[in-house]
Length: 344
Image (cartoon, rainbow, N blue to C red):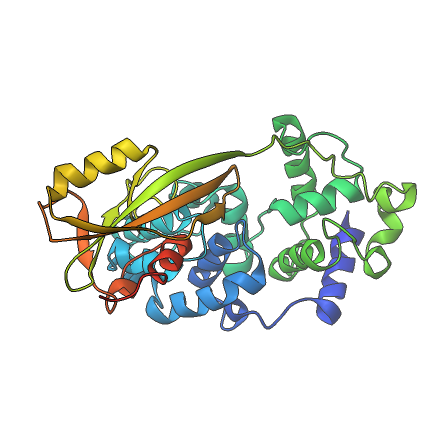
């Protein structure tokens, strides 16, 4: 086991990633933010978001004082918005319960919203240089191939086995370098497809490599085909060009972000119009269909732009003009749709 970690550390010195923005003047806070952003997101995508986020919120305290809209605005386009909401909630708890200092124990970290055992391990090992295992998707793949773990990675028994292996591999020192090394190995060498086995520092002991099982491990579980959800979006536009947006509920897709009034049937859309805008309706225009893919379903939305005179006050809505719309937390498809609209 010691041979594995030693080889990875030596490999990282020559080939590891050392110039990512969260690796410059490393702090537990930077590690935490980067780990949350990198969940379900590639480094190249997360990097510009991280830079803007840290520039706006350089400390836990500054993040805790932000409004939800300020946080979601900076997350707009990155997806999986529960990550941003939990990051914000956790910052508030850190300031109220831990004097603004990120906890340095596994038990306290996993009590915070959005922080699981693997994220906590990364914060401890990379941010505090404390001995702690990690088990993100890349590490699971490395271990499954190296130790020929043939079970379903989603099964609790397999996860338990992988955690035990991950912990047994931890070196006695340079834990931060080792942790970054095994993450880098999974991200750049032991990749999901077309892995660069000839460049791997531990290939001579890798069971999958020796037995020709690299393409079959980890076990590939057949995914269910995704359903398509079809919706209609109502875009009331006032006399000066302002658009009515509705704040979505915290739970569910795009929780806490601003979107359009959404219905599934044309009759519901017409009812929303007549109920809230009476007879002040003119120039109904069907915009270009919007398609967006989520992890578990596909979305197809048909936007309807309707010129109205401002009607009744509708709960959880706001009229915004084109100048200040960017100040709100908007999902990428909503931004894309707004860009189709022309000023009157």
